[in-house]
Image 1 (tube, rainbow, N blue to C red):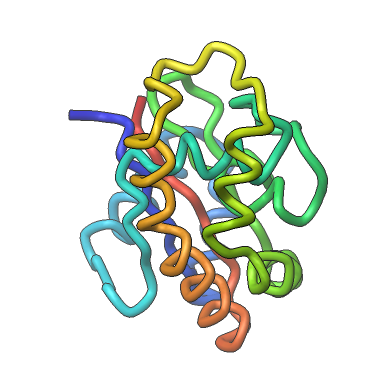
Image 2: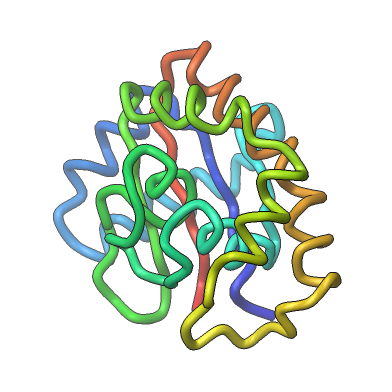
Length: 163
């Protein structure tokens, strides 16, 4: 089953290799190596919560450019490294990771609920109800922790999801 998002905090060598890959095939070869390593201390599984989280952290749309930096870069924003329709790889460098970590730190359940209720999600396939926001809320603390740890380690990060 597709559309399960994962964030990876990258070692400097992996980040350098990804940025130099030059093609979707090259990017996917490196992504496969990173995924096979599955270093649980440097990743966060977002499952399907990434859709709602991204929308709440941006302008409600499921676009790469929606919303304001740095929250817009926490999930789907950043530099796109894969151009095909079957897979998304979004990259944020170590400085952006620090900015994202600072911006996420104060966000809590009340903020996410209010944001979810205030946004009109265009082309959203979920119910838009308590199940959706409850699911996203379960992932918010780990999202904050992921970026906080990656920032402390000075790492870049990628968000990956297959379509």
